[in-house]
Image 1: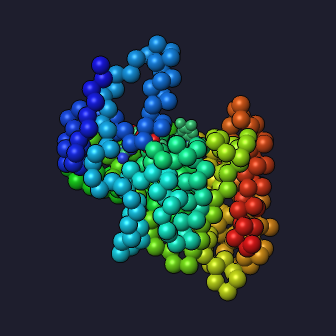
Image 2 (image 1 turned 90 degrees about the horizontal axis):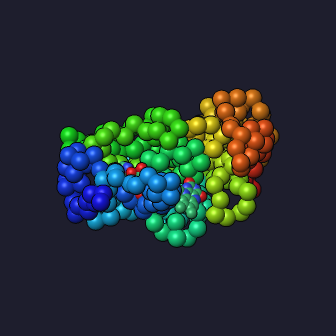
Length: 280
Ligand SMILES: Cc1cc2nc3c(=O)[nH]c(=O)nc-3n(C[C@H](O)[C@H](O)[C@H](O)COP(=O)(O)OP(=O)(O)OC[C@H]3O[C@@H](n4cnc5c(N)ncnc54)[C@H](O)[C@@H]3O)c2cc1C
């Protein structure tokens, strides 16, 4: 039998995490399929579980002095249904595309981030939002940019005694977000490529753009050269700016969903669609 803990306070959760190294469980939509797949190959699951469902203070989105705090256990449904400024339009669009309704009702933003899949729909949005992650342990709390938190393919900087307690999104008045995802079909699909952007325009020109691409490299990436090329461009012309050279840092794989070349072309087409949508 695997040990299963369900603490009722954050202090107890952190103490258990430090003492036992138990694996945090939020919605379980990544953990349970993994556990089942392993069992099917005759590998019983022995990792102790730290169920976070009874820990208060990890749910929901609140406005703070510097921006917004999204509790780690906030589900995709809550993100999609909370009234938020246009800055969050990309993240909310992603929330409506993660799996189907059942997955959105259970799956959480922190679970998506910690899984750190290249195809995690939340991650390019968090990069474009300049989000930082709040990590708590019995020894204290630290924050780091999401860009530093994901250290590689399905790898993060989460330390053994830590739990993600929140994500923080800085205020960016007047900015709007967008997200586009390409899969083999419209719904219930793992991304072949996806693009997220947060863009602020003044007098019809782009004042600032933050753009990230997912599923085209081991870790979703911002595109700083494209972001620089977009500065001061008329919004109506933004979709003409992306070039193949702006995607040089990506390294898309070939797999059953798409070839390297298809992903490269798809990423460029998605970027143009994404930017055209801001002008529309
Ligand atoms: C049918 C199906 C369809 C899916 N479709 C998509 C899709 O379209 N796009 C997509 O991006 N994903 C998809 N997923 C994957 C999954 O639903 C998401 O990644 C989801 O956001 C995971 O959240 P969770 O709360 O269920 O994570 P869990 O399974 O509970 O945990 C996932 C990982 O995060 C860790 N973790 C969770 N919370 C914390 C915390 N607070 N602190 C530290 N570590 C934590 C866990 O230990 C584990 O390593 C799909 C899954 C299924 C089953």
